[in-house]
Amino acid sequence: MKTALVTGASAGFGAAIAARFAENGWRVVACARRAERLRQLVERFGADRVHAVAFDIRDEAALRAALDALPQDFSDIDVLVNNAGLALGTAKAQDCDLAQWRQMIDTNVTALATLTRLCLPKLIERRGAIVNISSISGTYPYTGGNVYGGTKAFVTQFSLGLRCDLHGTGVRVTSVEPGMAETEFTLVRTGGDRAASDKLYAGTHPITAQDIAETVWWIASLPSHLNVNRIEVMPVSQSAAGLQVARDS
Image 1 (tube, rainbow, N blue to C red):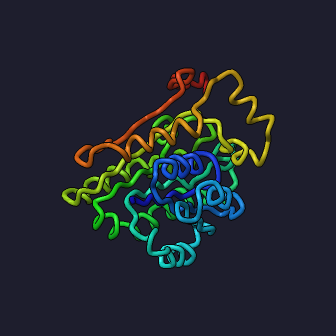
Image 2: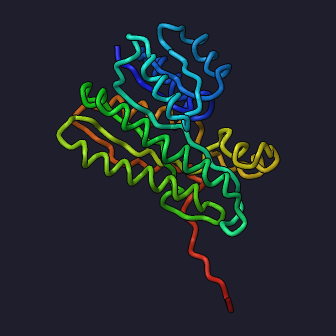
């Protein structure tokens, strides 16, 4: 039986990804801050299928301790899904909150890189796979995207760099880059503004968490000699915007 480690597994993409793997007979190490949300996964699939670990992924000591304490049945990681991440704030760079910038960098960049490095020996031993959840925000800039987009550009480039470094090991690496998706993402970004979230997604038929879970499951299920380097996913209702021009500025 194979094992997947999924971060940010308490909601949204992460919860759906963890469930998709568990439904298909994998063991899942589900990591997130909210223990009560993780318990729902354990109750749904059983403790022999899902091992829940609650900690803040920005806390390196807690991260190392969680990996060291994995039960034997869950310790052989075949697929690492780096999903934990967030966007905070919609202000322009000149009006932003520096604390929010630091939190995004610490979560989306530093924690992701740290966990990946710690899991690499086992992934190489198992000839496993890494799936990093990036975003189209790393490719297409937009007003207020600033540091969030920068962190996702890092995730995309880091994934390509890993492919180079892991050449010959059999480890596959994929960057999944979703567009507009309706999860708790905008609620977190706006500090719980439900009206703003509803307005953003109204009439758009956005990507769902299940859509991305299915995408990640497909990637993980491919034959071991195939690697999807990058996959960009948008709802049909979304496309790249044009360039801006400021007159008489």
